[in-house]
Image (cartoon, rainbow, N blue to C red; front, side, top):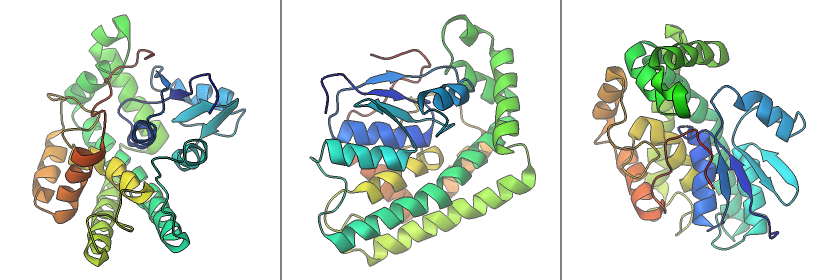
Length: 265
């Protein structure tokens, strides 16, 4: 890895950003974090990646700008092999990568949409949360930041639609069932083999908006929509939820990134 610190462009509350932050911290990669105002991340991502990606996270490392959390983890595995996130055994590696893809595609977008939908239904809660993710004076104009957040998530994700949210809830529950089935079939505490891998990191990180583990990015006291709080309570005793909390407890070091849109260095 070059002498220049990698720079991570991220959204503090994003679970895909949390996946990459966790990978960087797991591999003890000293890096700089940049978190611009949500919504501006689309043109910034397009500019950084020369049109290859329109989303965050984006990692600038060794003269490259990598979008997509899976590609970023793969690059980190190559640049900093230890401690590994890919199993050494080829069959186990293939299984871990397949599980990473499953949770990326079948959990991540749906968990995000479900939470945004419930936030739209509680504008005061959304305004409070949005105000905590923007810098300086903007954080004091909660009505403006809340309205912006509702419009952006509606246009970007269709989060205002009840039918989309209902479908997302089904997908989240299906992903939880898949997680629990994989754990039941595993020999130990991890999804693949006998150690923490990209499969565990991905599943745990992308479940965080639903589970809200103590070591996750949301600090204590972060406002939660009543419907999400009720959904969490209904799942609290599920073995998959307990496992997500345990993965954060064991492996998420350092525990929490600041919930701020200001640059971190």
